[in-house]
Image 1: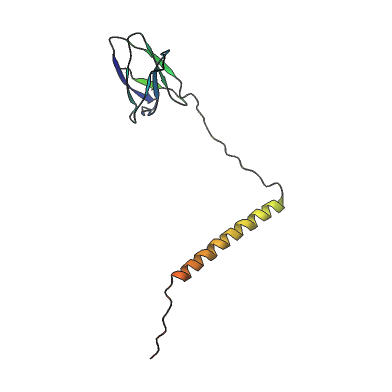
Image 2 (image 1 turned 120 degrees about the horizontal axis):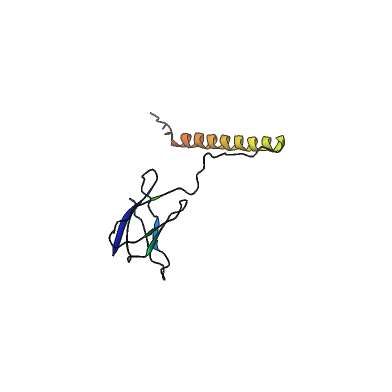
Length: 130
């Protein structure tokens, strides 16, 4: 029988490219959800469908002969409350000085190149003698 449904997260947003497979099938039988989280798979009554997506807790549902629509809401497996970004502090002032000197040289080179390109684009005046 054809089983259809939609996979969403707790916010109600569809999860696209989630995997729906029949547990313990050999060879593995499975499909992926479309952009709207919809799927359709052929399964028999009593088989177990496994729903999985990276970063979410896998879900299993048993196929019943009286219900061919199985909608699933998946929970996030990993919740990060905040992200901290750290940087590298210069180990000595000589390295910092060289890095700043290099950046200044690159900026001056770019300015010189832009100035040269502008001068090349200017029309050169023609001399007219009478």
